[in-house]
Amino acid sequence: MPAVTECEVENCAYNRDRACHALAITVGDTADVVVRHVQHLCDEHAHLLPHIETLRTTADTVGQTTPDALGAALADLQRFLADHLIVHAEIEERVLYPAVARVLGATEATATMSKDHVEIGRLARELGTPSETADGLSEERHLRRVLYDLPTGQGALRERRGDLPAAT
Image 1 (tube, rainbow, N blue to C red):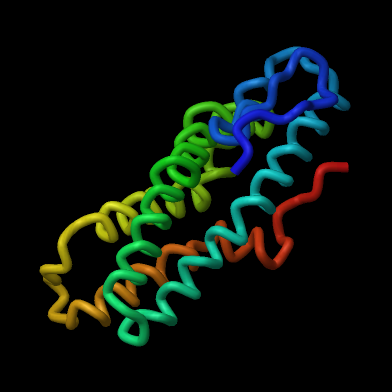
Image 2: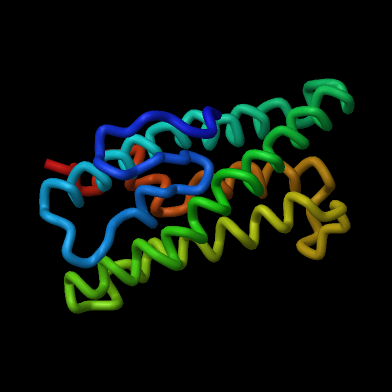
């Protein structure tokens, strides 16, 4: 993933890895500036989706690929989760969602997405721990369940279906 790209929004050095567009939205911004930042956030989500889809394709290979290949794929996914997806979710929680709640006057406006972030964080931690499964599943079934469940959070599903409002 590219670290820094040029941005046409004035005074913004867009860092995709740290979701600076969420950080860049400030009180008093004009609507057109906010819309451009929101569009970049939508673009960022679009950029994350192929990596999220890799969770599913990796789950499909569990039990059908070599342990070394699976280990390498899991290491890549854990880096993506830790360095990109979790960071993105944390910044949305810390900066974007409170701003949305203030504008809408309703903290429940982002409650579902916040729950998705909590679940994604829990599953990411579960993916990074040894497969001593408390749920009684075999190691392979447990790994498949975690990999399939990670991208099926309602937020990821809404983004994929296009239910999130477009920046206009």
